[in-house]
Image: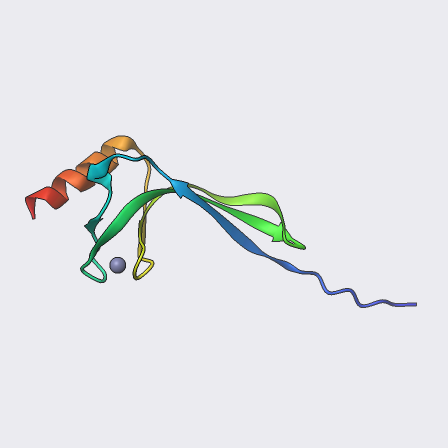
Length: 89
Ligand SMILES: [Zn+2]
């Protein structure tokens, strides 16, 4: 006897605040031109029946809360460069 059981797979994201420094909040978004970008810790997992199993992305991102624009960054120095560049503009 053959039973058809749907396999429910997908991905799920887990985000948390990167830090609470005020200079990292409200950065300029190059996509929607609002000051709504903030750094996030981002983890994305492959899920099977809604259970997170395998991490597919693990890193830090700048994310816009309005248009959902994202950009990865790897180090604190890179983040400092971005915030310093934004203050010049
Ligand atoms: Zn935006």
